[in-house]
Amino acid sequence: MPVPLPGSAATVDTGARLAAALLAYMAAIVIVVTLLPFEFAYPSPPQVLLSGDILDIVANVVLFVPLGFLYAVARDASAARPSRIFLVAIVWSATIELVQLFEVSRYAALSDVLANGGGAYLGAIAHRRIAREFSMDARTVGKLSLELPLMGLVYLLVPLLWLDGLASTEPATRLWPLLALGLFGASLLAAIQRHHFGPNRLLSRGMMAVAACLWFLLGAFPGLAPQASIVMVVMVTAVGAFVWTRSADRTGARSINRRFESNALAEAAPFYAAYLVLLVVPVTGSPPAGWHLSVGFADSMGIWAAGEILHLVELVAAFTLLGYMLAEFRGRREHRFRAGIARVAAWAAAAAAVCEILEGFRPDGSASLARLTLLVGAALYGAWLYHLQRAHVRQILGRL
Image 1: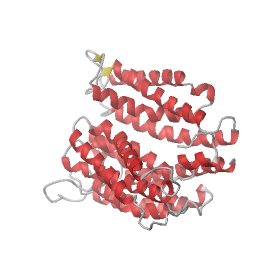
Image 2 (image 1 turned 90 degrees about the horizontal axis):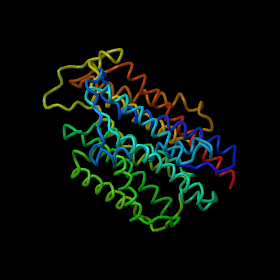
Image 3 (image 1 turned 30 degrees about the horizontal axis):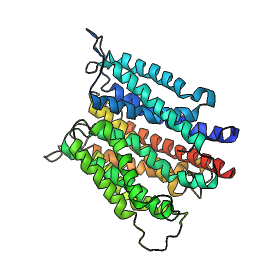
Image 4 (image 1 turned 90 degrees about the vertical axis):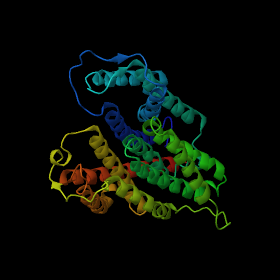
């Protein structure tokens, strides 16, 4: 993710806006993940543990690393000290754990507070080292791929992988959306390697395959590792093998293509379409009983169980990425966010309508007009993130 230049007011403005928007997006997802199923009652007696299991501790560290990094980007130098970010994360995490005391099926753990603070601290340290050790010249921009907004889409996939991993506990068929999402990201990384890193001799195919495995592991670990570690290893291997195969230079020309983003998205789009369909298609051994439609959320979801809340949040995150993709398809031709709103809204509404039609056949829910509206709004937010990313990239490149 782009790092603002020290002492540059213009760049700090674009970088801070981008980081704040991403921070709000990821923080909302973390809050939902940590407070599910939102069933509150007075604790009798309160359940406070000193420590959870090791996988839970590692997952809590992973969840807060991006938050610490983005918080550091969004703040000025004095407020971005790792020690200060650690304290902010401790306070925020302690507040979450306090709320969890009133969750019927949750318990508070002191180790979670320290793990969250430690993850945010690591993210802040990563930001500080990048900001200090890399001079923002043309060579560094190429190494970090800051001129490729397509990389922002790869970063945004991580919290979506969190959600899908958490939602893929049962039945086993729900693991297919996670694999489709992993292959979508792998296709993007393979295209970036084939058209950018490879020709520039910045990264080998093997290193990109390893990076893809680590990227998928970062996203899938918090939700999938505790109950499906063997499956996760297989999926990680599949993602790495896919990148290795698809990133091969088929022409031998090793030419640098600086306009490959649209083609890369077109190549990867079938995997994302498959993910969306698998996410909403009815999973049942018997034919659907009928099709149901409701105006609001209550009628479509009934009791707000943890699984249904997670499903809704995952759909919102999925359409946020869809909006980013729709903006990226014509990003080099559109200079203002308002110029593409109607187009993004139209395509997002069409995709949301298809999803809601399939949702109407689910035995545990129905199509929802309110959810359709929310998904279109999420797509517009994703398009806005893309334009913030592009504006920041232009500020960086304009100084070189």
